[in-house]
Image (cartoon, rainbow, N blue to C red; front, side, top):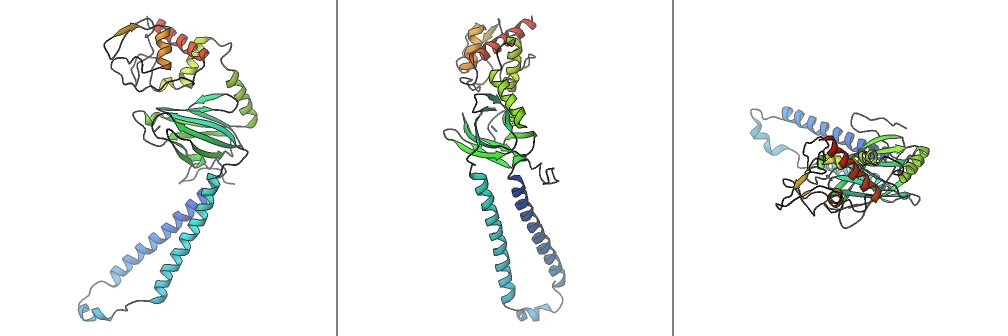
Length: 319
Ligand code: CUA
C-alpha cells in the first residue's frame, strides 16, 4: 500500500483514501487525454482546412454526417461517465454508511474553534485524538454559524450546521498528526479555526484517555490554567502579552478597572472573570465585539478556578 503524499494529493491516511485517489486519478487522466486530443485536433484541422484561394466553389461538397463517427462519440463518453458514476457511487456509499463498531466522538464547531467529546468522558479542543485502525464516527453540530470539518489526509469533509447533526466517519490507517481545517468561511477568525488530528497507537490512546479524564487533580492551578489557556483555545482571541486580539488581553486585567461598552466599569475580580467565561456577553469590554461563545459545559468548575488563578497571576506580573 502506498502511504506517501504525491505531487497532487496529501498522504492517504484513511481506509477510504486509496479508493478516492484512484477515482480522482482516473478522472484526471481521462480529462487530460481528451483535453490534449481535442486541442490537438483543433490545431491540426485549423491549419489543414484553413481557407485557401478557390475554396468558395467547393463549399457545398462536404459530407452531411458520418454514422460511425457519431456513434463513437456518443457510445464512448457514455461508457466513461457510467464507469465514473458506478465507481463514485460505491465510494460514496462506503463513506456514508458508518460501520456498526465505530467509536463515537461528538464534534462541536463554534466561532472559532473545534471541541471534541469522547465516549469515556474526556474532551479536547482543536486537537482530535483517535486510535489507529479504529472506525471513528463523528457526530457533529455547530453552536452558531456553518463550519466545515475537513481533514485532507483522510479525504473527509463535511459541513457542520447549527440545529442539526451531521455525521461523518473515518478509519485512520497510520499513526501521525494530520491537519484539520474549517473550510467554510465563518467570520473574522475563520483562518484560525485549525487543529490537528492526532492518530495514536491503541496503547497510547488508552493512556491519553486516562490522562485527560483524570487530568486536573493535584496540578498547580496556575499551571493548569496556563495549559487550559492553550488547550481550550482562549489563545485564539486573548493574548497574555498585553496586545489586544479579537478579545482583550489577559495581561494585567485582574484587580484593575475595566471599562465597558455601555459606559459602566468595574474592578476585575474572580466573579467578573467567571461570569466572562460562562456568560461572555453579560459585560462587553469597550472597543470589542460581543463575539465570544459561552464555555458553559465545556469547562469543569476546577478548570474555571484554574483559569481565574492563571489570569490572576498575569495581573501580578504586570505590576
Ligand atoms: Cu469555522 Cu470557518
